[in-house]
Length: 403
Image (tube, rainbow, N blue to C red; front, side):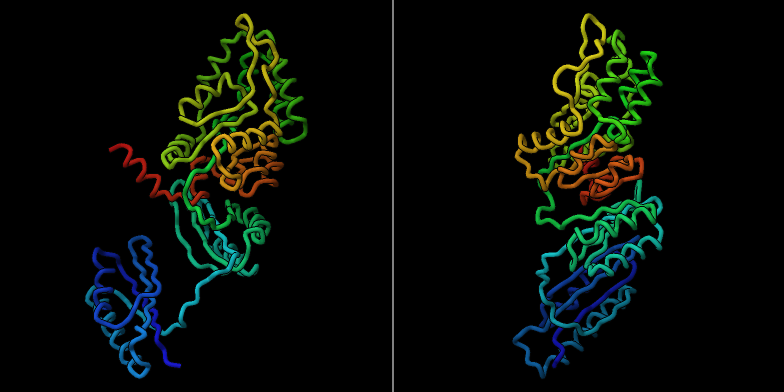
């Protein structure tokens, strides 16, 4: 069979006009471009182009055409100190496999051994990698692998084991047709959006810190029913001045990357909501400051300037958080597959399980076992990389906003 297709690979130090020069060299030849990919890594360019001889050219003329293409490309590459290789390839067949996946690996640092284990695990389960792309180098290194041949569900468990073994964060997701669009991002607050547990701060100021923190620890680890533990903790605050709430508002600190996460998602048109087992008395100003679309939390009752030790309204517990995600998705007309939930404790399990993508952020073991992916670096904006948003896009968005 006569070769009619040629793969051209050009590599070398990147400079303006290189790609244009290669295609300018190809232009006089009776060939058509059927595939191409270009990648620049640290200033080094690799350009792969697949061309096919025009159907009007006879098979007898095909070898002559391919040889003229080789000479033209080699000359153009040589003129610019680039290396070039050419080889015949089979005519490409469109990949219509329904099993496509993307795997995002994040580490700080990210070692070669880890990449070896990840890629061999994908191959061992029938996956073939089509594209590899760095999406971030700060504050973590994040690499996206796209491929086909295996469903994401077939990779989640084996790659979760790799994640634990290599101490890196790995996310396995479908490759959706909707790469962008409106998503709902549901954020837990205490120990996720902020670094503290508000009830523990209130308890310290009220002089009942040790009793409350022990109950909090057991609740977050799933050892106690959240609703019962919350009522028990709140009851210990009875009689404390409501001014403690003002002090706590000044004490809470956002998790590193929280502002970047919310700012970037807002600019991209995502809906962000806060859903917390904490207290609206403290969360409301945070929600307003970050410009989120809504929030749901428990509310401490205040009468005559004092905390009564009771809550007002329904308790936002595990089930309450799950229902809040459903309610907000309905309100904003966002399908479940486009919902992302981020949390750290056992009371986030139902919400995480309900979401299209559940992210355990520096989480307790009970939640990590239920989540689709884990993030164990202390930067909340690392979640952006799981959504396919690159560091360059974040920086560009900030630059455009400042102009």
